[in-house]
Each structure stands twice: as C-alpha cells, then as structure tokens.
Image (cartoon, rainbow, N blue to C red; front, side, top):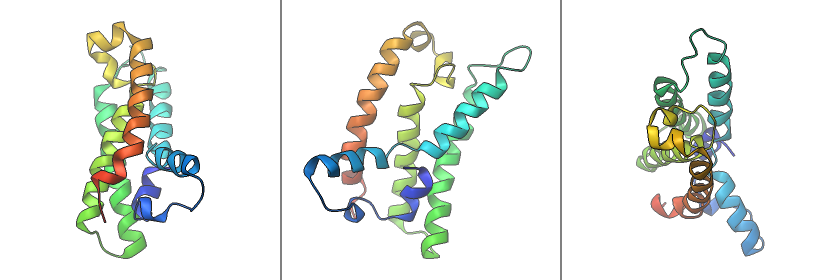
Length: 144
C-alpha cells in the first residue's frame, strides 16, 4: 500500500472480507509504505551520482521518515477534512514501518551504523521478518 493509503483508510476494519490468509496478507501489505520507500530509493540512487558519494545519508533517512509521517496526516486531512488522534498514531506507525523496511535498502542511512553496514544480509533478513511481524500487529496498536 502506501503511507498515503494508511492515512486515507481507518485500518483493519476496512480490509476486504475473505480468507484468513488474504486478511493477513492485506494487513501486512498495508504497512509497507511503498510510496515513501520508492522516493527514498530514488533519492539514494540520485545521491550516488554526487562526488563524493554522500551515502549512507542519515539526513535523507530522517527526511523520508518525516515524509511518511506527513503523508499519513495529509491524506487523513484530505479525506476527512480533519485529523483525529488515531491519525497521529497511524502517522507514527508509518514512520516505524518506513524505518523497518528502509533497513533492507542498500546504502540506506541506517548503514552509517557500523554493525549494520558490516552485516547487510542479516540486516535485510531481520528487517523483512520484522516488517512482516509489524504489519501483522500494527493495526492492534491503533484501535478505532
């Protein structure tokens, strides 16, 4: 889905009915902020053309996390003409989701931390599992 999509809908209650597997997949996919991840990845690729190469860029990581936060609130405001307290929680959860999934991107700002830079395979694997777990439980953290 996207950070924008998280802000536009009200969470698990809007998931389409169906099998438990479909509901689980829908819940997990909902919490992959694909719009922000795409922009973040393009930014990292663009920064690679600079001399000297500024990657990993912690600043770009923070800016992208703020973008995830802002998109959720902007989508909520655009859709409902007001921002509810639950929207603030969803915005914070979108930042966490972005943080988890951005760990799997090469040259991510996270790689300015030595342990992460020295173990990229494990980091990507742990991030993927963490993203799946987070996606499965995130809606429980923002009740209606």
